[in-house]
Length: 174
Image (cartoon, rainbow, N blue to C red):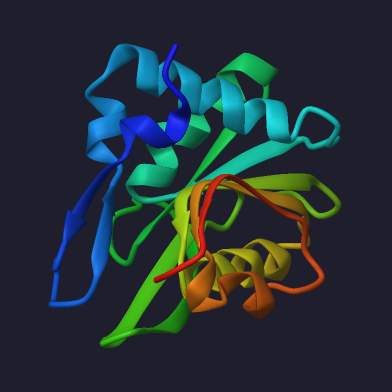
């Protein structure tokens, strides 16, 4: 069986010269790669006690839902602004080249619930930090963050210092 890293395709000079883009779609398009990704991420957090799994649109849904399913926990959607039908809470945050807003249903996290945050990637940590703040605004306790890939050179781990972060693959560069 191949190692998980072997399923990730590296695309040089995308989206700009000097950047190596780590393509998650190559993992998803291979049944063995997808299975290995989910199993690896789930294994990284097997010691955590959590009540709810939360993930951001859209790749957090891809990896978070099977982890929630396998652990028999509910899954909470964190979406871009304007996509959820009921009353929401939202947070604005900075991106590398602009701003964004994410939101979740106001009743999706109950005070005191322990939450596992799942996403495909942590880079600068802006989205992850925003998810944590949003969950905590509802009284949830983030007990861990698990991602498929960490781009360590962008220092996202430092931005969420104080929270447990597990990555299935860590790339030292950007």
